[in-house]
Length: 316
Image (tube, rainbow, N blue to C red; front, side):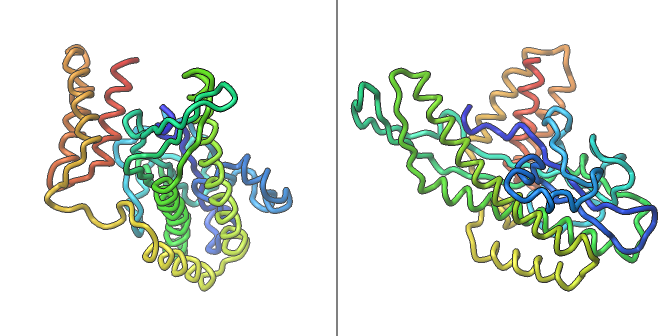
């Protein structure tokens, strides 16, 4: 599927040496390190120690059962018992963030424009596209050796990275709502390749912006301990978010508004799992997904993630 969930989880965190009270360098949560170094100068990339640089994980390495959307972070949001793969205990904290979207095969609206140079031409738009920034709390880790005097600074720092994810997610949602993709091809396979290439280019532009802003933030607040500068970043991002497009930051409606795509995902997972009576753990996962979609949670994003995971595991 062109719009399916990103198949990577991006992690990074705050680097400490022993129990020093002043953080010296912080990695940007959610950055793709290869793009950061390609787009920006090598000198800037090398400012972070090797062990503190961002790491890309495969999505299968995570449980993805305890995820949250953007909000102010708490110490309890870091539930990992050990650093994510690729990090070591010199890190002060590590946050795992990724993007989810509601784009599937039923999201596309095609308008046929005719033939041009022996190729079929279509305009393609999306039906109510949304992208969410999510944090996996089971993957995110907090070093118990952090000095209490810098805990607030580290929490605030990781929230800024999470806020940068949220901002990109909302920009993507707004842009996809108005974007018209013009694709062409001699047959169905060529049309699909053209559509995929244009989506890849679209995602890539957002990744570049995310990389650049994360690195800029780290250069200003990680190489030195600068609470004032960090608070300026957080205040600025909260201002951008409050004035921009909202794709789920507000608390869910306690009445649990209808969500057709979540309902379809739950139904598909339930049908598939019921045929696998020898795997009761999958039925339990679907039960958890259905509970997430009902009051008091009313969280269709988490419900769909769990349902999709149950379905994916059932096919393995």
